[in-house]
Length: 260
Image (tube, rainbow, N blue to C red):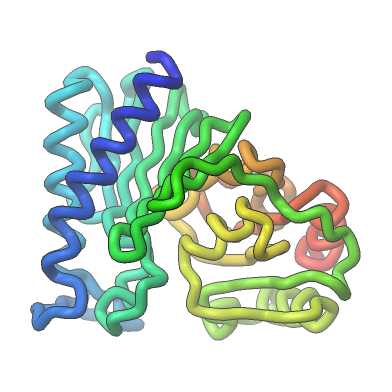
């Protein structure tokens, strides 16, 4: 598969998923609780409609590929190429009418992320990357992304979805890192990673991620010059506790604190 062909296909995926999801955004809709136990884990008609549309297009174009999605599980994931799908990353934001959610689609080859997309149809932005370059596609055209050059924690902006989700000793370490940064912002979900790729945020920290939450973002971050790993410095492709930094210098400082 050529990069050009993939780029065109991801634009198709952005279009079909946006058309499936947007009719439910800021509209009356039913909101379910996935397992009915524990912390509220919402799922909406928009989540399901978006994943159905994405799966249909992938199966039509690449029938031999595997797919793993948040809403409908996995198929043929032993294939050389596997697609990861999170139709609405940030469902809590979605049900509150906040435009900080996005559609994540990533392509793995033998388990390694090779292409990824974060699409926000309401604001009309699509972030794509192949690990070597990354771009923002919007109404203003196509622009290459590059991470920030800030290397001092005291100058940096850090983001996480909700610091209350980072508990125990991990929470203590996160708080130490945040206290050394200039500014912290919450509630940004997948948008934080994309804005880091664009040079607006310097560090993103999360815990409890699934592969479809983060693997689609890896080629975007790395293509823009950023570094993404687990808190122990391992590959983030399978999720877990993840730290993203704009450059190697910041990443090393963050790991020193988060790694315990």
